[in-house]
Length: 145
Image 1 (cartoon, rainbow, N blue to C red):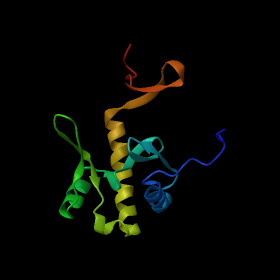
Image 2: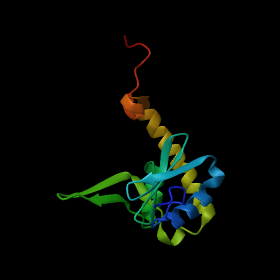
Image 3: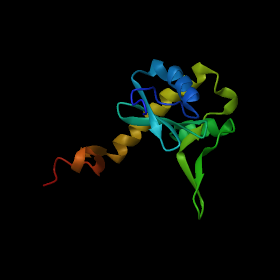
Image 4: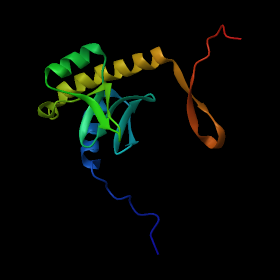
């Protein structure tokens, strides 16, 4: 009989995710959770970073994207059966800088600001739908009837 109370097995990337979470701790209440084949990092419900296939990506604005790009960083991309999709709103932290905690933390602070600005611009909020799940819906303006 299986023991239902045992610790969950570590999965590939958990150690790196723990390292990143510790590095990001000075930002405040950072929440890490599984995201596809990796981990997502949020503050106040807004995702600002993710680890996919062992690479740390940060949410960027134009300035941070330019800075990271100048250091050789690339935007997040993935392949579908028909094409490669590039997500220009997330850039990889350059591999040669990942152990420079103060630099990464500075970029992460900017990533939080970019993520919050995007959330404000998009203007979405989570609402309850059936069976306790949530979905995104556009915010209604106060003047809407």
